[in-house]
Image 1: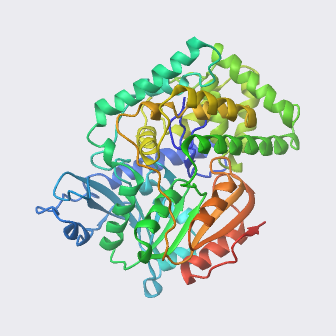
Image 2: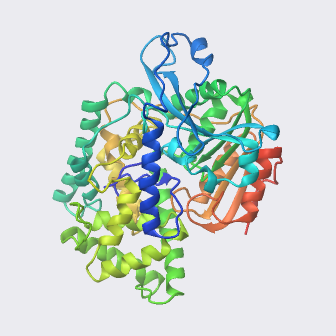
Image 3: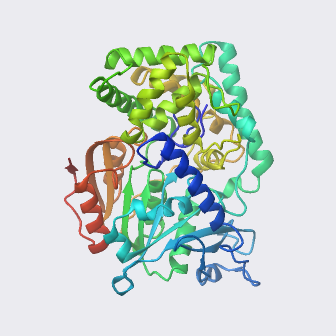
Length: 520
């Protein structure tokens, strides 16, 4: 079972913009590096104490100015205060870490570019720490690159916590393709346990961590940065945050890039089915690449799906060997999560080919390692709070059915259109059926009155299929659609000079492309 708003097998964070190293070993090194930098940004040097007179009114929150302190390698860090409940600004508050890389050409500086990697539950601080490799020199010259951890996420104080490392290991390893009553009972038991642990350990936070509140925090941040309007890049679930911002504060929009779009109008279980199709399409694209290269372990595109499905089923009954040495089990659920992780970027495809070759021979080490990267599981068996934040925010942001029959019907429909990923993605959402706080009611996002908003979609995006970018661009009153005929999750900075040039020109000069253009 995975954990998150995009979930290959139990709620995996499939809407998180993943790092793009060339090889798996580099990814591990990068994860360790950025984790250390994030910790530094939330430490004493980078986190000055809250002011003696903390805000008690909405005007007081908007009047904040960030106390920037040097943190790491030219970055500056600060803390932003926001209220738990915007209707009661004199109550409890979150303290959010904020980081910036100042513009390299102050004389031509436009302002701040606020970035968010998605998830939900991804650390904006960690994402911004990669600014020198994620953004071209032309953008870094004109903008401070600013990231923050949303309420309840990462180094937010307080932060969401639900399950311990061993509990998450069990949750993620649960077979999400129940073939009998006993297996279904285990899925139900683990889903109920997740919801109960979140209530037990984070009850005070759960009603307040939704994206609508995070969008209000984003406007407080805009004000604290001294900006009259917001320039923003949201990837993956960060598009949902950006869309809500435009809905709530349309006149405060300067430029929004929503890359790897989530469509707010799609009902929750229908969204699961759409995403399952996206992963299935992405796996077939990987298989075609694999078959054109040497030593591919797949017999053909169609037969490769069948063979991989059989591998997952066997490994759920008898886990494969693994050399990770940290107690991680290489059962079918974990192997499927590793496969899904590798579909985020073509840079992982060589690792996926190696991992499948090993798995077919009985060794699940590489696929289990990929799954650990997806969930942000550390070598000592602990996790970041990505999974807990992802689940808590996802279950709150839109309504979910409470009947088991609705999930059974959706799982069957998903399995028909996506045999490898369909049922696990749907069953991975079941914790939301037992969530202890009510979800937000459905809302239509139109952002009437906002400047043109650029929505970017990748044609074979596994986590946020292109049809969602089309739908979001149509939903928004000023939406402009830009497509990329590519593979992997999100488009900007992923290898298309066409996409990058259009996005850069939009951010810097507010140049708006023709809607519907598809870049090669």
